[in-house]
Image (cartoon, rainbow, N blue to C red; front, side, top):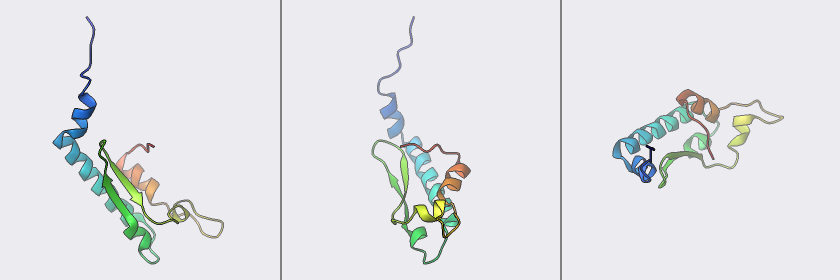
Length: 97
């Protein structure tokens, strides 16, 4: 006897309303956490954070300013003020490509 997985399971999981709701909630939680941790000079960085629901399943937290990495990692002239990595750590997420 052998086990044959349902070939549609991945699609079914990604389109399940309960899974979608859980991912949406997790996305909102990530957005709120990142916004609370983002350094604020003008507010542009914090306000550029957004969550996008992906068609293939999941959500994406994005930062829509070109200089997002300078506060996250620092420069020779400013210390880091991480806001993305602590958000992912706090929520227990894996970073994937």
